[in-house]
Image (cartoon, rainbow, N blue to C red; front, top):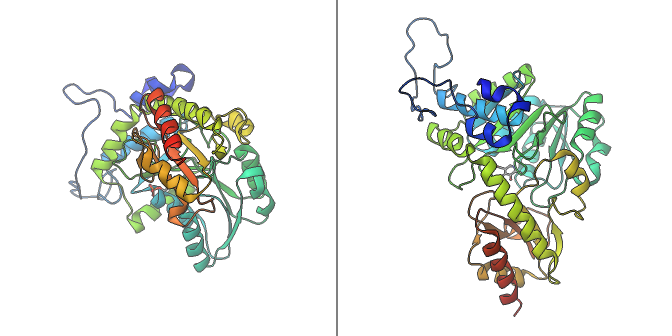
Length: 382
Ligand SMILES: *Cc1c(COP(=O)(O)O)cnc(C)c1O
């Protein structure tokens, strides 16, 4: 960690983002060294040192891992980050490395749509899977005897929020580990480790990298023993990030604060415009002062994300709305600089109404985007 980023109190998020993970300057070398493409490294004699084989470690990962640690836990030297090929690779690495047959795990019932598939696989390995909703800290009720609590806050796509500190304290009092999926908030929006979690896990595919061209995941943790197990899992499963993807991710993190501030401010403007429309119901954005999640979100989040969820009266209306949008692409995922939206029910996984729309607000001019959304709502009324 360089001196400029060591002390959280001395630098703001933008400064930290542009400098995160950079090596000490070396004359005639680039500021951010390019991707290191290597399956193996010169290794005469003893098997020691940081870089032996490309499935275990890579210098491009090392710099990215430092960058993520500096954002997830500024000023904390004891924290470690491991990058993975995707968010799911990172999530699975924590769950499958920490849990054994006979253990119980608590998952959110309204989490990312692939989480139930992971739960089924855990059950097949003899792990008891309990689920409860994110809202109302309902996971508290099923914590007794659990080995690990998995939190997703804000949840995707429902945007419910739970009190991470409260849940982490309750889990630790029962001897359980706590992991938080921090994908939606990004480390500039929320720092799970500071709220008491043992792991902050995220998909870097979304707003962290923000250009819709990279799949990536990471695990940040402070418990050396637990992280050693996660590292071992990465080695045996081999779900590693390519050097090019890792370098693109690091390059993108330099603009994280710019993107997040712009996209999140526009998300609030879009939510405020949607709130005045009679055909819109179930509007959720944790940054809206009257959102059911706002009170807890304001306690533990520094920024509220770029995703807005809402429901139109019917499936047909939602489809017409999506087709009428000109600046918003009908596509899945979120967090990119180009706005996207989708009718979430088309995937079948989430328990949401047919007209439920998850919109990811990009970096377009706010007035252009709000105008496009309002025009598409008018045109789709037909
Ligand atoms: C997208 C997403 C994931 C999975 O990440 P991938 O990079 O697509 O594997 C996990 N959790 C949340 C909350 C997500 O939005």
